[in-house]
Length: 122
Figure 1 (cartoon, helix red, strand yellow):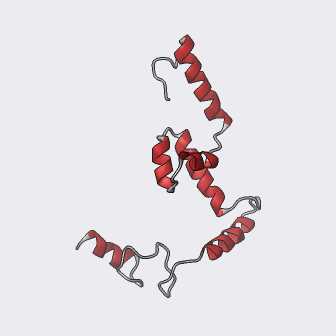
Figure 2: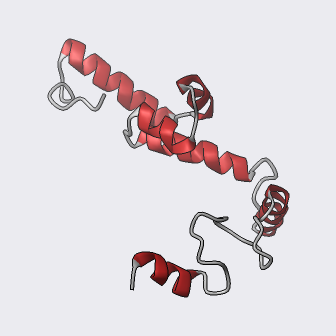
């Protein structure tokens, strides 16, 4: 059995075998609306006692920031989130203080020598 057939038969048995269709289809075969996703996320967030500022879109910002902090190339991150311009991806990035301090230490080590000089992460 081909990989596509396995997915169609096991992962999405009630839906069409068309793998180019919606990722999260409704029982009618249409896409789950962004409004529904936002409302459901807000409901779950509130039930969990998380701050109301947390949204589905914030998770996208977190994903971009994590990729940058974990050392993935900026172009890779830009492609992952489908941005045409690196400046758009930069808006999504808000790295933490630990990451900033690590980058500063590595830069200074390359200039002045030190334990990070031999293995820079930039």
